Length: 328
Image 1 (cartoon, rainbow, N blue to C red):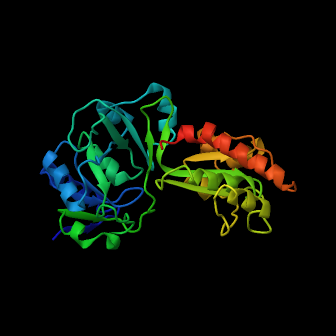
Image 2 (cartoon, rainbow, N blue to C red; image 1 turned 180 degrees about the vertical axis):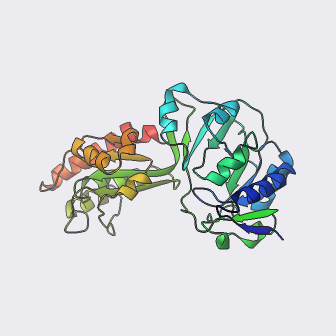
Image 3 (cartoon, rainbow, N blue to C red; image 1 turned 90 degrees about the horizontal axis):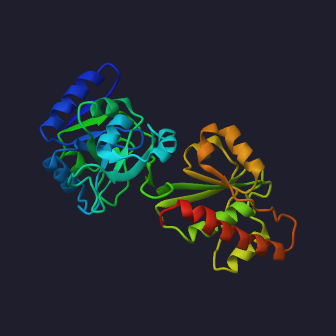
């Protein structure tokens, strides 16, 4: 049976030492992060990394993610593009995993294309643990293909019973990290959330949401919102009709008002006009390098022919400006 310890400020150092001792002996631990509970081990222990795969019932073709303490530690194991450093530092520490070219050879964590995925979590316990090891190997604490856990009670008993120690830090946010490919000429989102913003969330942004969903995999979550109240609470009849003409059904769409929380947990934000960008940055200034203007006119009040024209323009802008920032 695993040892379960409750993490609090008074016990943190003692628990840190116990966890580090276990990892130094090629053990595996369940630990809290700033996203979900994770399985971690010494990133240089092949025995421990192999054990994580067995615990999770995970195929070895899917590499583990490396946890590091800071950008300097990251640069010891990966090639960090200087051009993208401001983009990276605006998201680290936090819920963003970046895929880089690897400097090292390390089984189970370096992919067959010689890339390595790294993250600096915004969690003090993990950061302190990372100071003890060159890097930690990690993955979510769940059986492969099952949902991630935001509290210890949600973790499958077979996972808990097969690790040496479990650190309970209560309920966590429960949102997995975004994943970015940093090996190309622009950062590309592999897993994460895309947000479209217009005025009332009744025409342009829901059309964009529906069209992008028809292009991307389920690893990309697509939402939309408006900066002004939508008193009808739904899409316009014309928007529904012109999407239906292309085989997209949005009958059950419900309009939403833009919130700071939406922006905080969106990785790419596409707005229809400059005024929408200004509102986004008022709510969440940190979005300055994730918000892009598509320059699409509002068809509200126009006939069905105008809506068709706007639908086609949105599709063109998605192909040119949105899909180029997503790894499909």
